[in-house]
Length: 224
Image 1 (cartoon, one colour):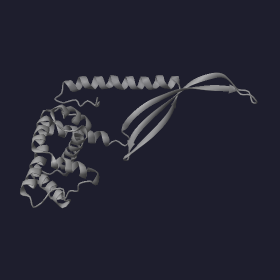
Image 2 (cartoon, helix red, strand yellow; image 1 turned 120 degrees about the horizontal axis):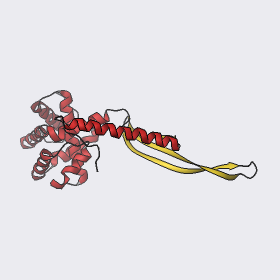
Image 3 (cartoon, helix red, strand yellow; image 1 turned 45 degrees about the vertical axis):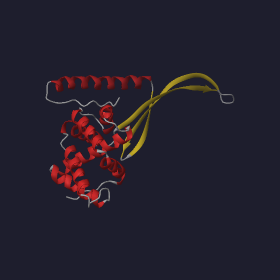
Image 4 (cartoon, helix red, strand yellow; image 1 turned 90 degrees about the horizontal axis):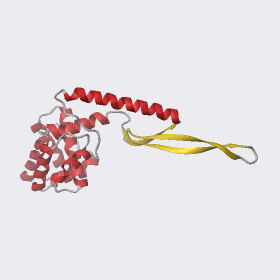
């Protein structure tokens, strides 16, 4: 099996490989006890009190862990075969010394341990993939509200009235880029939008009631 470590993840992969043994053990224990989340950032925040790592380093390591889990799942490989392929690629990229049996064995063991974390890392990584598989996942949203004067008169325009206008800004992650979409709204549009959102919230609550009777774990979409 041939793997490739993306350039964007090589630095994070180095962080993963170079973690001291005591910090690795504490991270593994924290991940084993953690519940599923919606993203690597949220999972890192959940386990951070149990791990003596900086927030950015922890996020990078978990990002690599999630990427390894999803890649193995997509390839349909068993844990041993996939861990060996990761070691071979790490040696090829010069990230680990191929002539050091202790280093390659440690990396192989760490990858295999990560791949066993189905409940926390596995569910979180797959849930993130499902969300990001959409064409335009929402990143942020804002509504700008302004007063626009209405002028009359040709030679000496004078404001005689005013209207309130709203602009809805939706920022999406589209094809690897952040795109902003602006939508003009009036008061009637706001009420329509609120009704649509309220209905969606009500439908979600109904689905959660059904989910509660099934052997499913709900993944909270918030990271706060």
